[in-house]
Image (cartoon, rainbow, N blue to C red; front, side, top):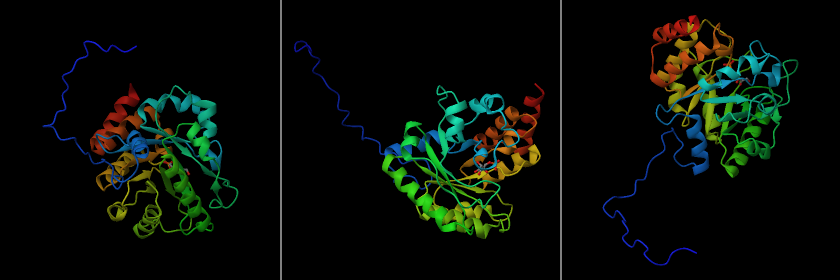
Length: 292
Ligand code: 5RP
């Protein structure tokens, strides 16, 4: 039984210290609920406001992509350098040890392959499974202008509704068809549409002309995909320019895991994303780490 005698009576109510009401560091996210903010704060570093997501979900529509043939051998050693892993539940359960505490962004759309029309996707994972897997966000592909545009948008809005119910953010991944113009006008449309319909953050591509107009009129954070493999210095320059022009981070796959030294590359990308390191300095770091 709790002691009733000798209980310390003096209490300090700190009446002279007003309770802080803090804003949330992430663009457009202040009105979200606590659980959703907490998950976003695990994906985006609250100090830099940015994230380095390691994207390894390519197999969900194109099978064993170069560099991802053996995720246990090639990717697990990179995990300590990533802020977040973006992957499928199959790879998560079969290869990633549950002792890994990095936030997981789960690919939850699927249903098409490179052999058929890619935009013909549905939500392919129950929300309960995302909860069981303790994920920090769910990723869904959105094909603006694609053949199954409406279906993919409705996949996104259904996922957003489910995510809001349980406090899990939705990452809308804007996918661009082969024959579509990758210009600022298109990405302003695609990213803004996803944000207007409620996505908590959005993946897009970096473009040379007018990228800052895309980040500027999108009310929630944009992370950039790396796209196809380019020389390491070019990839670091792309990441640098994106961050300087308002991106919230990178969700990079091939330019990390197909680099000559993936471990050196992801560390170099981190300095650009979190420390505003210039691309040539980051490339020096890449070469130093690669040669160690
Ligand atoms: C596949 C994806 C990838 O996660 C995305 O494209 C990032 O990877 P990469 O940097 O290799 O482009 O969404 O659909």
